[in-house]
Length: 113
Image (cartoon, rainbow, N blue to C red; front, side, top):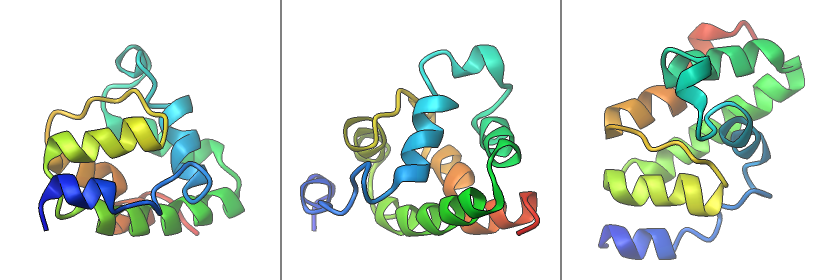
């Protein structure tokens, strides 16, 4: 399946289906995020520190599901999903950066659930 087809065929990626990820993207990885944080991972960590236990758990679940959707995509298509579907402004520099922010094991290590 071509990556463009996967983007079209990923109707499950909506703000309603990923509310905590959308909140994170809009509130922490906004267009000026680099003025507030040294890295996207730091933005994620601050978001998780600010979140309640329930919100952290929801974000971790959503991030794990999203990581699976993003895995086969190109950087361009992954960015399209994060911006067009989830309302973010973040323009990641690489797929590794996207994986680092949304990898479940990274989120689990950073926050004691």
